[in-house]
Image 1 (cartoon, rainbow, N blue to C red):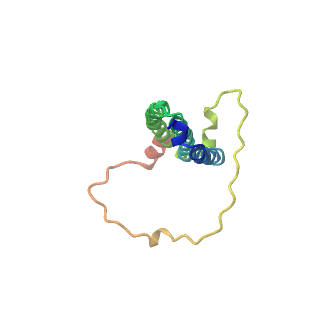
Image 2: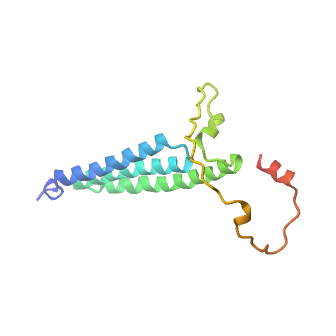
Image 3: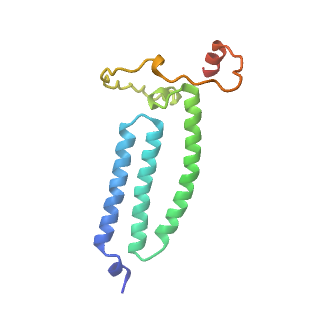
Length: 155
């Protein structure tokens, strides 16, 4: 019994369709969203679609090449994920926003500017005022600080 008999074309096709669906959903998420975390997760979804294709082809040909290559890819992706999330945290601390259009000033000097797309106005919803929130008892001693120092530290 050869490898194509055990792992038939139909099963390979099903794995490749799921991988293509993962890749397509990831690409759609990356192209339509502006939040850096959602964009990062979309790239990871695209990577998982490619990895599924590698594993399916490796299994179809009866070799371990696809699985070994996948382990290497996922190891590098884990390192990349930690660096990317640390970068997102630093970017959020600087601008207090995860919108990708806020970071257009970090681009190359000769790149054309990106026009921000305005979101549709959300319907007005009655939001409860601050007096309706529960008031918590402070714990410990609050350090002395001025509002101006806090504003300067954020910019």
